Image (cartoon, rainbow, N blue to C red; front, side, top):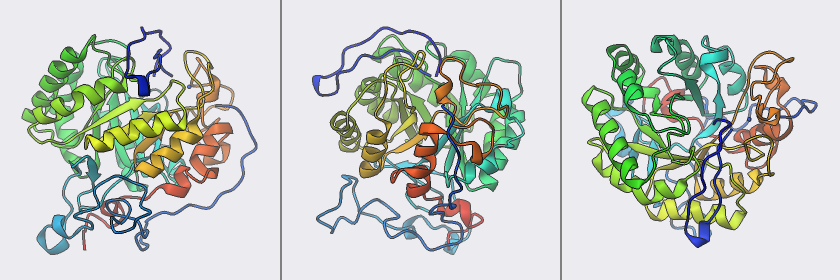
Length: 386
């Protein structure tokens, strides 16, 4: 997310919106809340696996309910989880269990390279955290390792992303960073529990550049030895989901591993019908899709109000993953999201300082992280699939 303006573009009538650039909370009294429906050591939720039971006429997700469970993916008699993978538009952990991401973004490089906030984020029940990083700021990628390890230790799947090409189209230096020997070694050390988001909100001029640029980037990264799921943002500062719908399947076909996730940053006003239509379209296409960023207002500035409650509700119905923007820094006297302070979900790293809409999406809404998140089986069972 970034405080820049970008041109609008045409989208189909059913989903037509204007798209402007992206990015960042309000103080309310925190209340104590239970830990939520965490998977840690407990029995799976009744609807875990590949969404609602296909035999149930009231099932609300259009996801294919075949191949449920973990048995087909359990290696070596149940010992030792493999890497996360994408299949038929769905994300699975290394034990073969479907994972629907529920979590937050966190500005790791600037405010928390040690991962001090991870334990507090985990109190929401989050199963994922997107870690803000830069390829070209002169910071070694090895400094992200502490946050990656802390996320995994607290039951969350880390997604490491590079912010250098926000609202620009410049992948070369970022891919050089990803394919450096240090980065490849880091990713391979943590590949059982890691997602890689190539470039935050990189903005190609058209679909042809999107297909070619990301196709080449993915192939370079695979050739370098990176085989985790790779996340690709929409164009138009992340908001152009139509670019993902139109071109994502082609880029997925170019991936030798066929292991990609496509991410839209939904910062433009959409009602429940429009959101539902978008999510259902990704399901129809079997396109692996998440909402990589969401908040309560439209940037730049604290612009138009967004129906984040409808977004969460429709995402839960369609089993679409999402990550809220953003947890913020650890100083109660500063605002991390200087463009719009309301985007700070907390006033410090502490769960107890959750505020405003951030507290709603993390804890109190029926469709909040705490009420819908399931932690990956492979994360909570010491990499054992039995």
